[in-house]
Image: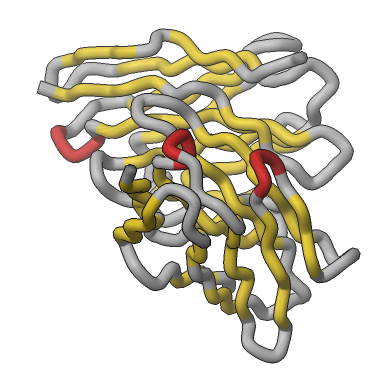
Length: 112
Length: 112
């Protein structure tokens, strides 16, 4: 069964450094999403991406964040200058023609 | 705007007992509603979804949920709990860009 994959599974970085989190959505899916989950808290929507542009973003998704689909398979989330409070689990998700979002296993980001 | 409220951050049941996890939603448009399950250190797995068809929805692992518009509820039930059901459960409502707004989650503990 096709699945969403994410790399790396765990990323440790120093405050102020740039990180890129990578996702490979299910092929032929059209809508792509990033969510985050701070430890012990609920899952929060960050951004949605369709037709090579952002379709919706939350208040969390400020100028420090950007997304890109550099080729036909990858979908990336870049955090330009990481802060301690960016430490969280980041989930990528995708939807095809139906209504179900399929989530990847997540990348745990630790900012020191 | 959409929102989800999950009553009870922790629920404990005995093995074989009824599981009832509560979810109430707020939505300005007819909602699409979802229940996801998260096992420790894993991603989110879809249990079931309501997308304006039958109000009683059956999902995986014996779970079901009933959409009640008059009560703005979408409670999750399972007749007989199993030890393997211990996990965190998230209710979510879909927005205009199909992004998901999640509730705070309910941690289900199953006692032997």
